[in-house]
Length: 229
Image (tube, rainbow, N blue to C red):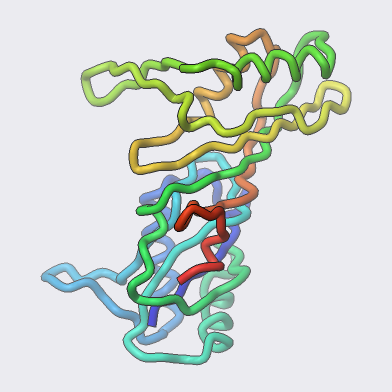
């Protein structure tokens, strides 16, 4: 039995990295005392497939992982066990039994939508901000430098940027909508988006980011990870 779990990573635990989050999920699953499946080999671990990694400091409101059971159980019981086991760590919102043969979450292209909160530190109008954001979106390529080990490589991140626009400006408090593509070839980083906005002339200090929605591109359609198996 393969179970897909939809969860929230709240602010209280948003500063742990992806590897530590994976360990926390594995420990939480063990606490459920459900009949878990384990990997083979000398160092057996909980058979677990995490969804798309969240950068440190980002709150996640639509996150996922899959795990496996050695026997079928009612979904209501599994849900209750998960809620109790992850109390104070993650908020379990939904679960669903899916096919063993369904592709892994991170093997598919995804669209990840964020609300980016920041403070505008000098005078600029909404129209000016929107025009500057449109200028970023209209670029045919956006070259950044990324450090990998002892080397610096240039990468065009424009293919990963789907949408960037101003949602609201209340005094100095701004909220931006950022949608990015996550593919096996890579994605765009929040720090890179910040520098794009600053380089474009938008005077903003980013304060926090919430990933609001995870969507998959599956068989030519955009679907929720809960809507296919």
